[in-house]
Length: 206
Image 1 (cartoon, helix red, strand yellow):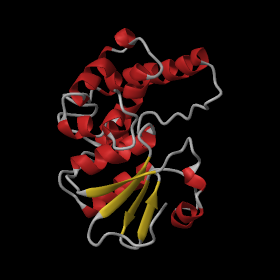
Image 2 (cartoon, helix red, strand yellow; image 1 turned 90 degrees about the vertical axis):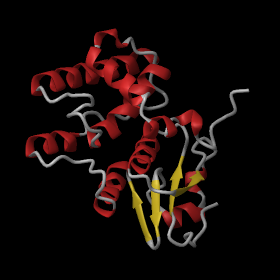
Image 3 (cartoon, one colour; image 1 turned 90 degrees about the horizontal axis):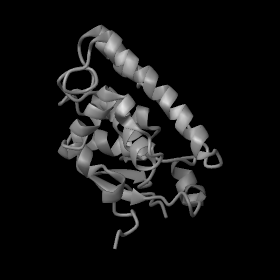
Image 4 (cartoon, one colour; image 1 turned 45 degrees about the horizontal axis):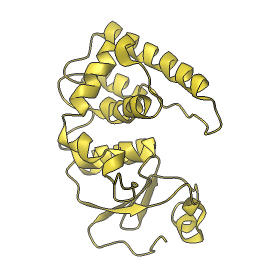
């Protein structure tokens, strides 16, 4: 299912529509206005263990970005790779404190499929409380998480908030800053185009 040859000059993103990690990579690519080929990897069908995909990415996870003979796994590594290759618009600020805050990535919580909804909600709410306090204490929030421009922190935060609202049904009234940020993300074309339901491998709503 994974081709050995890369399309000349065009990046390929191996992605699963519902994966928050893949969601981040899609946002980063969109923000950089990079034309890429979407390659679906169905995690529910175990396609990440397909021998051809394993040759491409032995870690057996998505996202994986292919650029010529380079294969970059992990959404954070992909974002930094794109930042280096396509410096405009920047995802990292020049201000050292804000840059460090962006590198924290706010939240990257893994929740197992077997965990109860209540347990999952508790873990997300604990993380969201910390993020809400962090943004307020640092006083760095503008239109977006760390200022008036979209930056790396937003790339990571947006999928977490989206999943919390759409899948876990978190009550966002306790997180006014995060709720406001979600509204900004949902009005931004790069974020909207990256939404899970808009991907070619997403189930039809009809």
